[in-house]
Image (cartoon, rainbow, N blue to C red):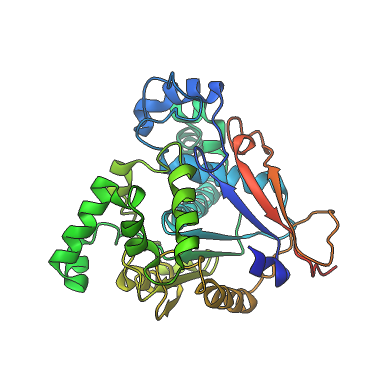
Length: 356
């Protein structure tokens, strides 16, 4: 965020449900109970904490809807660039799929309008307006996702490669693969700093910073940010080539030294999304932490300068001083989000070189 702000961009870091200081209120617990079976979440609200209504994690569609609700609430003058790291890159890709689905729906609606058959038009209209129990519990699920100027995947597996175990074994060998499976299922990286360093930082961070970030990771999540079964089954079909021309440009940035997301998983975004792919030598999974962060930020900023409409300026009237400052804020719901972005916390960093 500091590098983006210093380069003239306004940056927002959004804490999703149960992450950071974002809380879930009692009314959302009741909504979760109503929508639970359909979304793979608990059918009963938690009695111990208002921040833990999802026993099995937060559904992917709900995370994406929350991101869309936040973007709507800000009324940006220019569509923003959406950046996601690791699992966040999965949310970004699902957001892109949502944009693609909206494009398909618009094309279908145009076909209906041009049709001379009133009966066909009636049938298509009724099917497109149907809603599920999940939509009733979380109204913002059915609202359209706003347009983007670009999308960035940082150390994130391209859709279709999350469960590519055969390629992973061929890449790193069976012993390393089995060790990583042990880490995943035992959560050893959340209980042992040595394992965390092995997975995330290796030798890219000094011990003091490693301890600080390790404790921050352990305390930041009150609920899983995903549903394990849903992530395992996440294999959406790639948009056709013609559709890619209507989607925002994509950057896939990965580290050659990343032990969690391998280079082949990052590179797959070139064919899948038509993405620009950059693999950086010596860069580990947590690429935005430690000394490597400056080089990664430079790559990101270089891409932003080359992408049409990527010079994003939020439509805010707040004054900016000589230095960029992080300002904790509370996201406000927009567009009738109903249980959406208004419960999510956000950190805002203003550009100190805003252009008129």
